[in-house]
Amino acid sequence: MPRSPVLSSTPLHDALAARRHGLLVALPREASLLRSPVLPRPSLGRIAITYPLAFAIDYEDVWLRSADGVRLHAWFIKLSPHCKGPTILFFQENAGNIAHRLEFVRIMLQRLHCNVFLLSYRGYGASDGRPSEHGITKDAQAALDHLAQRNDIDTSKIVIFGRSLGGAVGSVLAKNNPDKVSAVILENTFTSILDMAGILLPFLKWFIGGTTSKGPRVLNFLVRSPWNTIKTIGQIKQPILFLSGLQDEMVPPSHMRMLHAKAIETNSKCIFVDFPSGMHMDTWLSGGDRYWRSIQIFLARYVSEYDVNCDADDY
Image (tube, rainbow, N blue to C red):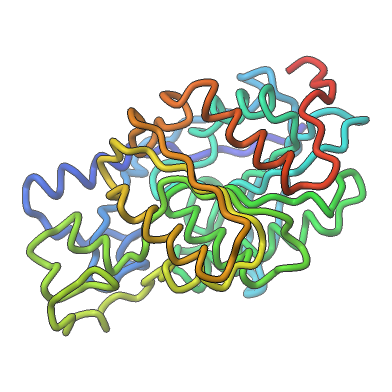
């Protein structure tokens, strides 16, 4: 089985360090996301090779081309040959790469009995290119198109799962593909990068902002990738599950409440679940059994013929 290197990076808590020191750092990854960088770029100085096999997970290396020709890397994990459960198309947070999500994926396989597709955005992991909202949107579409053409999954049961930045990515994809995506799960997602600017760097909130800003927002034009999820969410027709960690130290939990409130204006198939001890990256862990049961119930309600008791083989 071909193995490709996965780049290792530091956690999103680098952003908190920048906030403490009052620094406006201009580094390559976020420089491509924001002309006036707000989220510091996680360090890619160290390279670590980590694979699903290290977690006793069999997998397939997948190489894709986005619509603009960028070469992308992904992992496809099939639960078992005979179990045609849902396929989770997972979109990760800003920090790290898909290798950092493998413990989460291992438990997901056990608890949800699903297939999982993990995409490396352009500029992440082994994928080529530089990240931007326009480019990552193309990457997500390439991943969905790949899944829709596979003959070893039930293509009527493709579920988007996005955490933080991944929720913004997944929301756009769901809006653009109402016939290909059966349901959406969002966890600790922001309303927009414009709103996040004032959270991470408070001195900017008067000049850059979105729905929550009371200032003149005269510098909004500097933001290259606004990821306006609060606007997108109201255009999603599929069922949506909102998972919110109330101790989120990066994205204020109020953002998830605002997204939910906007969604239910036009979509009656929305469920909101909060977790009192959940932080930005560990809600899935601190939420325990209730976290996974919430997803199981959501899938049972909205994904046709979902059977959580399907044999998970070795997982």
